[in-house]
Image (cartoon, rainbow, N blue to C red; front, side):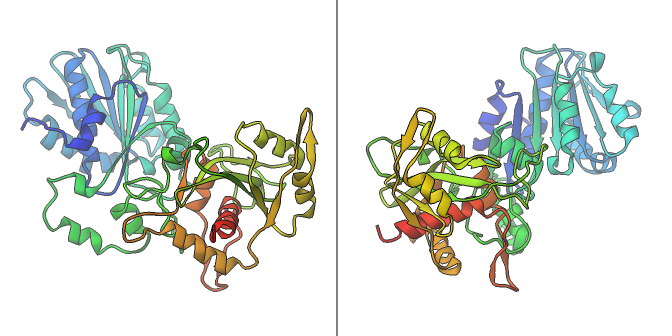
Length: 416
């Protein structure tokens, strides 16, 4: 049957500029289909091209993806031969589609021999969250084939936890062009598929039904959405001159450690955080952030000032951070000087968390009162990781620095 892409698959199919493509979202959206068809079409168009399709284990490749490729995509394509002993499909124009796993060293060694001089033209990593970041790096570095004017690696997956390397590096870190899909985007799904999906609960519901990179356990802000049609993350949250005042939220800190692989702060870290925001038409737009460890307060304030945005109408700071308040009231660094008015953070955590939850939740018209710009990657990671301890009935003191700034801002602006 001739492949006709779904509406959301068309830009994926036509994207020849992105070196890395990430297909993510809810289950049943058609991610695997467009990845497989694009690989197949590439090999037909460019003679002598080499494609590699991998799952983490060869068993999952053999029992799932291989059957899908063989029966649903390649089918009885004229001249394509399946060389089972060498784990590859051979096209009449000299192109090759090899497949394998990367779970054992033997499996990895087997796929290292694929391609002319080890080079690959196009790669598909199916169920990509099962791979280690080192697997991805190895394949990315081999993307040096010459059969076509462009090369590409495609990752397809359902979401995992917010601290998974794919979310941190490829989504928050913008290391890939992201295409998200929902099961509603695929009209080939059975009519009772929605009913089946809606019966899911907990973290699996968030990941498979809602397409969220969600953490297990009870999230403090479980209505937070990073991606999808109801996302709080949007380019529209950027600063717009002349249409609303600027406000800063600050959470004091000093020590911490960066995870070298993810680029994010580890759980026990306590960075000093500045969030820059603007109120427009009843919505709080977080448009910039500054996270620093082992930095003098004046130097970090100067760095925020150097971003070039207007001075804040006021800065919300923890009531116990006397030294930081002093630096904000009257301070200088190099040629820069400033005088900012400060206000205290909320007196109670539970009450202010409740207000933030209200601002993050949609009203009857679908309007939410908080938006975050994509460049605020640390805040986005923390909002998806900030959990609530049901025993102590309070938030867990991890990944709470940006959320505390947001909480302070919302509390200070709730009556404005």
